[in-house]
Image 1 (tube, rainbow, N blue to C red):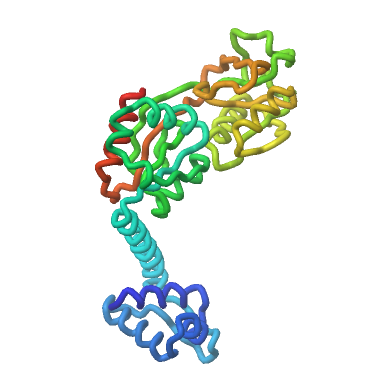
Image 2 (cartoon, rainbow, N blue to C red):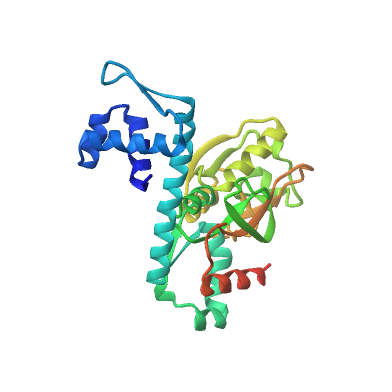
Length: 296
């Protein structure tokens, strides 16, 4: 069995046509047939049943099972190639959600002399996205390390996750909003008539808002979705809507007030550093994790 055999096999699973697969890889059709025979010999199982027509192709239960594993194996190989390339280039790609970047990472780089001395900034690449998007990028091997926001639960067993800080969610609104007078706190149900300004689905804040809304039995009215923290804040300052944000976010405008939520059952924001379980940490990455653990 060869690695290319698995590549041909997964492509055949999708195309259901030997000729198309052969053309896709620039090889002969008999080469594809030979690859399938090698796999069947290796696993001692019939994988494919071919009918009379070229398009009459069916995968046996064993063939279906092999596809699931083959896809996973090829994905791991691609991730391994990316990680080895990163190691050889001495480049570390770090994923940062905008909120955690502003709250923690800038402070680390500017305030920690050890970081400046030991970490070569020229060999660091920053990839900015929401926590949900970064989680998938980590799993795919597109980035090496990430700061992730979560609601306290680790939803995948493929990542090693270390929490280093927690924070509650607050309501951010204009001081012109009639609810702004309740500085001691409000319940989420009190926001029923409000327009919401939200991050897009790649941010963990969306899940927090959904959880709060479900517990309160209301459906939020969303006026705007964005991935730009400063744009979101400007809309809130103009009293065009309210936002649910973790209180590690500093208001960017003096007209914005932050009000705690009084709900008994509410999510808690967790700031984490995460990497793939099979990723070997570099000296620089270990240093970053150590520094982060001191920021809590």
